[in-house]
Length: 235
Image (cartoon, rainbow, N blue to C red; front, side):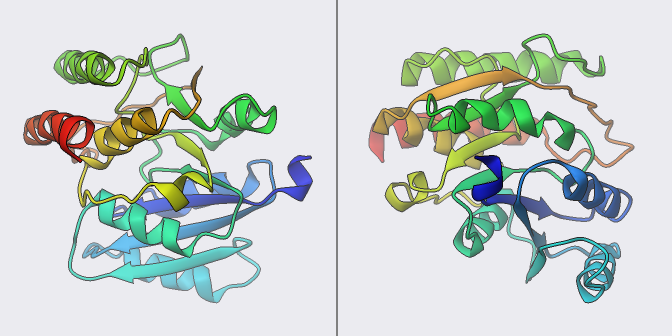
């Protein structure tokens, strides 16, 4: 069954020259028939040159397509562009920073392949191997997830996870408006409002430090709170 389906892996990237090629090679060797869609969101650190070189080499990474946005517009904007270019029956979001491991794809896709789920979230908090770093990020994530659950009546453990997998048909009914990290609460609120079947599965997580290039900040947390109320109650 997996061979007959096309998986679209959407990779938003901004200033990830240190990790982008390694990430894409890990995605390339992961199982499933797939296309890899990278949306470079105005990078200025050489990421664009790396992507152009990879795209020009047909023997490097199979089914790689690269799109460039200028100027930087944010993760949500890049994801929206990638979804618009995707051809697969299943769509998976993959960060470009090596925090999330494509080796987890089988357990992420299985509930959809089994016909049980419309959406699958990969949870960093359900027992998978993870790097112990930044308590206050952890606390902030748990607070945002709790607030999201209260507003949506879901019982997620990790609303802010990068790893989100969707049946393609969902994006024929849901339009993404957020341009930045508030994409995560927006899509969660809208999926819940539509009544889609949402599953979670444990994943591994190799969280990086700000010195390594981590970008999300406390300001994004406040934007996420507003997004939860906006998209659950008013939009």
